[in-house]
Structures are given as C-alpha cells and as structure tokens.
Image (cartoon, rainbow, N blue to C red; front, side, top):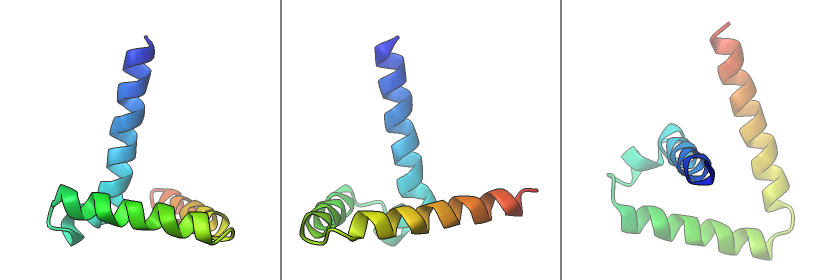
Length: 70
C-alpha cells in the first residue's frame, strides 16, 4: 500500500512539472529540468521568502484553474 501511495505521489509531482509548462519549455530534457530544480532548491535555501512566494503563486494558479472549470 505504501508503494502505491509513493508511486501516486511521484506521478502527481511529475504532473505538476508538466502542468507548469516546464517539460515543453525544456524540450523534455531531463538534465535541463533537473538542473532547473536544483537551481530552485538553491534559491529557496538562500531566500527565506521564496517558498512563501511560490506557495501563494501556486495557490492562486490552482484557484484560477478551479474557477475556470466551474
């Protein structure tokens, strides 16, 4: 059961990468995507406000998407 939950979680995270447009932007290059994510992690470690900013932006995008489907 834990394995299924982990698999589902990883699939959902991959879906977010796709939804954000990063797969197309990076031309489906995994090294580019991984490098970008490493850069984001480094920025978040340096800037204490980055995570809060990204969270707000993400929530707004989810809300806007939810309202578009209503």
